[in-house]
Length: 339
Image 1 (tube, rainbow, N blue to C red):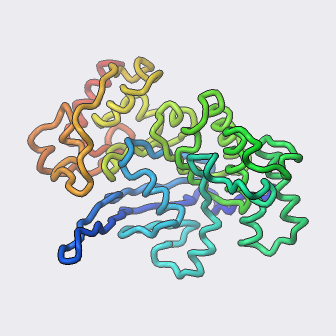
Image 2 (cartoon, helix red, strand yellow):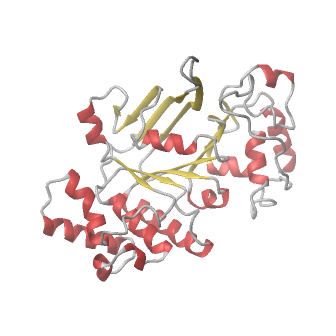
Image 3 (cartoon, rainbow, N blue to C red):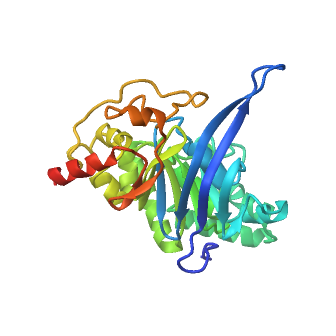
């Protein structure tokens, strides 16, 4: 099996710096369009063999971030580097070549595979489009990839409807790996699967990462899944990063009130060292067309003070991670007392 297209040892596969995505929403012929900021200045790096999990409620900008990193959309502002190349400034030809560096695994294994094509043809399509491999070489690689994801050789000649959801997601993972990418963007890859099958697919992803040195950008709302697979965590709320750092630090002592609420509302994580009691967030998620003027979480935060409502906090280093909260120091003191 050939190795993924990785950079030199120690270099990040993808780096984002102040990445933003703003959509213009039409309000009619004679009116200026509204501006919807889906992602509002997010920065991160993902290294070979590591997984960055992006978590948050629906509408927080996770999937928009995934589309930018996978080059489906270009960011409105900021810098995005793949393979060391700034894709925003790159030519169309260079950008096309870089698309082989990053591949997607979608949420729905039932909708991501063409029901009219056999599995062999589905797996070979990326090679047929992007390489000059001959048909026998493509078939050989497709069969070897099926074996790598735990499927049998005879599956090559079957149709998608003949497989279970877990098997279809294995096929989708195999297709994503056909071009030997350095980065795999997995957008809720197990949320549509039964819980027992989720563990199998997550273990497969972990095994493939170890064997091939893959980097993962893992999009999820399920913190139980994130705890199983991530190395680092980026917590997003209304398009902004509110907490960011190593998984162990964030799960053991979350500092942002939103991260605390997410962890406290996740079954199986309450009482596992976080010191958090179960509670439910109150209030509605603000509209991204009219976000709060200060901290984006201030309208739902039980600890908000006047400063939070007028001054937007920036990500700053604190207790081994980055957090965007004016009052974060009080939570470090609380965590110290609990431990």
